[in-house]
Amino acid sequence: MANLIKPDPRIISFLTLRKTIGWLGILLPAAMLVGNFLFGNCHYIQDSNSDYYYTVTGSLFVGILCAVAMFLLAYKGYPDDIKDNIATTLAGICALGIAFFPTNDTSANSCAIFHLPLSDVRDIVHLVCAASFFILLAWLSIFQFTKSKGVKTDKKRMRNKVYVVCGILILVFIALIALYMAFLKTSTALNKLKPVFWLEWLALIAFGISWLIKGELLLKDNP
Image (cartoon, rainbow, N blue to C red; front, side):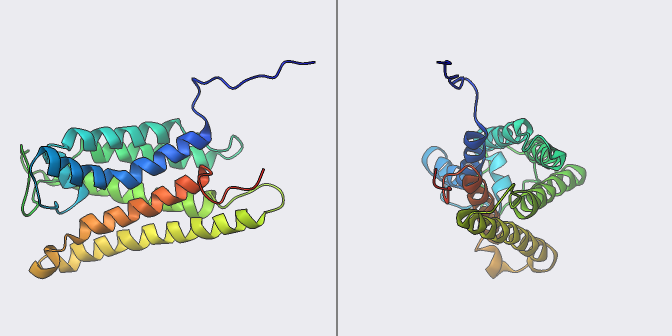
């Protein structure tokens, strides 16, 4: 009788990779809020997730983004579909860009513990990387995750609906951030609600749910 080949425990499976990416995305804003409250005595929500770069959880912010980037760069997708690999690689590069080209520190009620000189170039690179990151994730969710081989099961059809909804929601939330930045940023009443922070978190939740389902945490086909 042939010996069964056991999987090497040192190798991270695609399913684990997908779930890890999903959880990191969903939990990043929560880690920033809790970390600043516990270790920085900061009771204020910053204007955006990126503004936490300057707080006591700045290293954690960079670390989580780098982890997401490394997982995305390591993710190859389906071997016969190079578009998967290209999109996740570009998304990983964008995540690194978000981490290493920080936004300008202009948050109201700032909990910053250090500052950098204001730089329009650095800020533009950060914004382009952030927007590109979310657009790539939305594209993956809508067009790549919905692909399948063979007959689609009922669960697969359900998963596809969730993928599409998640991708569309990511685009909607990013579009709302763009509209706010372009036309409503001077609204004092709206600024107090920290709309960018919450819209970013909603986009990250949609992104995370999509990857968690792709990792078969939910709506898994029966064996």
